[in-house]
Image (cartoon, rainbow, N blue to C red; front, side, top):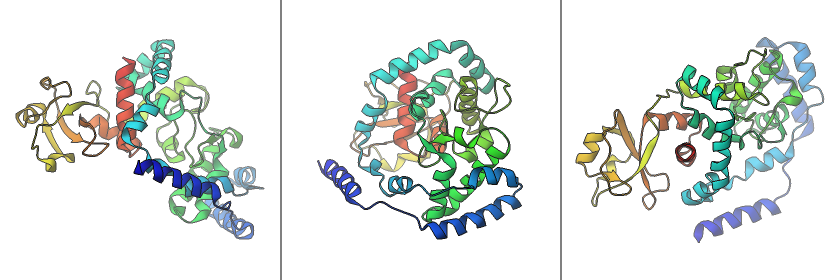
Length: 321
């Protein structure tokens, strides 16, 4: 009940707060300094004319940045909202429709297709929810704001490089209010590092082309250390009096060692003799379920540093196949 009250208070405060606005004169001065910085990084003047002329901050972006009530959502509620029966059915259909392509990409990058589809589904609902904000103005707003200006300034310069290289036109670059782009919801830095032109069309199109979307997701996971056929983890049952100091990413044991300490599967059965080292996490805290997780779970945490998110990806992947 306390979480519900907190969430209601956050929403009411957000609704009653005055719109957040940037000082226009100062913003234009800041934009000129950014332009000089971009020129020194090799971004062409014509690209800057194309992207920065007439650019204005987006007050709505700052409003979203000021109110982020995700911390008030319980782990159980998050899973119910994220891994729905409808999303599972849609994921299975998308996997079937793109099976040959996904198998090919999976073999090339060493990532199982079900995890590619799970990330695709959770990040953008299979391309249906990429976000409607123009990326460059949104990032400029956040970079000027000052709260996390260094991070967003870097991402803004990376977005300008994407345009400068011809990978996307400014009006194509739409995404979330925080700058995540396309069906894979890559930040510009992730795009530059991991996006793939898989179909050889000439540019890395994570907005429209499924082959590029799938290959970019798989390439990112591969660079994050994904290990094919290791899975992500499973729900477990901890024995009474279990040493809670062993819970967390810092402690790794093999399956036999965990069995000796009394860990069981969630249904009470014996842990299978799987290879590798495993850790225990409790995304919802001590009162919620516990999971024995592999290094692949850690890879997803590098993608999005949220235990809720990483567990939901694993759950959806398991239910796809």
